[in-house]
Amino acid sequence: MSNDKLRVSVGLPVYNGGRYLRTSIESILAQTCPDFELIITDNASTDNTEQICREYAAIDKRIRYYRNENNIGAPRNFNLAFQLSRGQYLKWATSDDYVAAEMIEKCLEVLDRNPDVVLCYPRAKLIDAEGTFLENYDDVLNLQDPIASHRFIQLLNRIKLAHQHLGLIRSAVLKRTSLLGDYIAADINFLAELSLYGKFFEVPEYLLFRRFHPGSSSWDRRNRSIRLDAWEASWRFVAAVRRCPSPFRDKFAMYRYLFHRMFWRKAALGRELIGAFRQVLSKFSRPANKMDQSLRSGPSNRATHEREVRQRKL
Image (tube, rainbow, N blue to C red):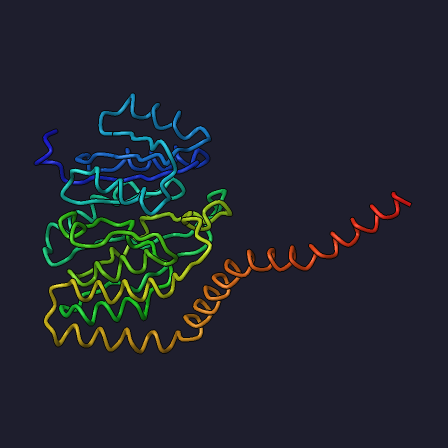
């Protein structure tokens, strides 16, 4: 299969996903659209993930397996899967979830027919750790408005569960975005930025099975003592609007919306600033406290020592 003819790349970032990984991989290999590659980026797993991946890579030439020497964090591992891809379209996958056999084919048909659509995703069924059905999740992000600001604002007003990025995305458009950042709710920022470049299309069929279990709580984040995630997310929204090709009038509408959005969230933004300020103060106050303690205890210790010396002489 030549690179220039490859239609779809499936990027599967994984870390210690051995429990459900076989189900995820087999659902991808069973796709009715055979023209794809599967790129697995193993984030230095310590369970049986590597063994499973190498087993499948040995029997299916469509699989390319990469193992990171160190854990680089889940967002960077997602981005790495895309950076290693060669397809015209990208589908991110996870080790917890799985997809129906016709998922890629149905999304591919939509994207081929509609050049103004940048993301096509199916509806999702929510399942638990054992695969038991929980509920149908009806997404509300079928963004068909031709005006970028309308799509952008609709997405931010409607989005709840952010799994639409597990659909099929145009790789050429992905390259124009900042991809996934390393902060809370970065997937929402990514989807909002993607909406600036084209429409979203929702396939009205339940073809994604999203698993909820204790180990799937969230992406691992950098071990930072000071976090300003809400502020970073807000700034990233502004930066995405600044970079997009929309006319000034459209950008102005988005800037105005983002300003109001920050005002509505002023309490959360304020709490972050106060928390960060307190952490900074605590870092600077610890050495001072230790020094003060030594100064306070120094004379007392010397006096005690002098009394003991006098008593021994007597």
